[in-house]
Length: 369
Image (cartoon, rainbow, N blue to C red; front, side, top):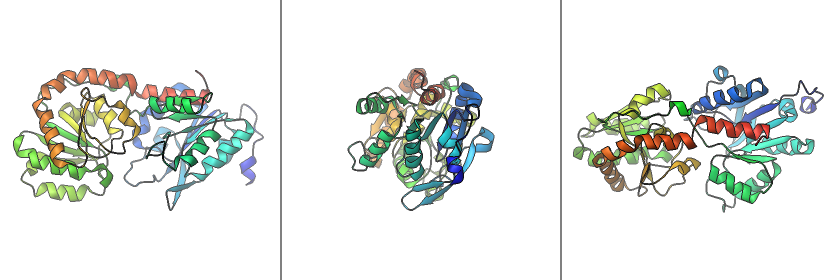
């Protein structure tokens, strides 16, 4: 514990802005770059490995200039990390995870409050089951312990401002790409139905495959492309290979590079979220491709990007026939969605660019308005 209180630093030695989080997925690479562009050498970032879920691909920390921490998980997703305590306690301003299952977040946030130092917590404003969940009592205590909060959406940020008036609250909408990289490819001969994401049970990729198999004979020139990896991939590939529509289904594997995804999206009529929506919706919209989404799911905050009948449509949850009917509608109205593509990109760039997300995090650290 001796290093825990090693605080006899001069003002010039004390780290200014620090972010220390459980982990950073590879999709955070552009945000890290944008933050460094804004804050330069004043910023230090720590992130842990492994991720809580093996299907999550982590950022190349060394290449991104992120300092690696070692993660240990206990039952119930409780996270223990090996931490640079002195740095975290002495930083002028610090961002930690808004996660009550991480013991050091409570300890560091409480100690920094006694020291009068700014500690912002970044994450879901409420539990996944909503603000009325019993588990929000604990999260609510943590929210009040912090100096301020960073929310994933503007809506969540405003709700937190109403709940905690006077506290600094910033929105850092989850984003993948710089605005300059968001553009619509005007290719009229689009032929793909697309899924991009982890191939895990909660994403319900099996439902998408089943729906496609039920209607594939009614759109013989259409290809179902499932981009990603995960524990269910092998079983779904086997099921597709023995189906009558085997020639219309492909599994290219995990692809995260923007320039490799661009030509795939350029040939896509609609992307699909058969389970809960996540970052894939803003990814799809950034290419001007609309999304067909399961209606009644415990969606991630990115659902705020959705504007029904403008950039998305919904289908009835867990209903393969309803999903299949939705796919057919998109095929029939492909020209309408194609014409709307540039407007979809423009809307996404205004609300979900990497620059907007980095700005929210930078403002949380600096306290500027």
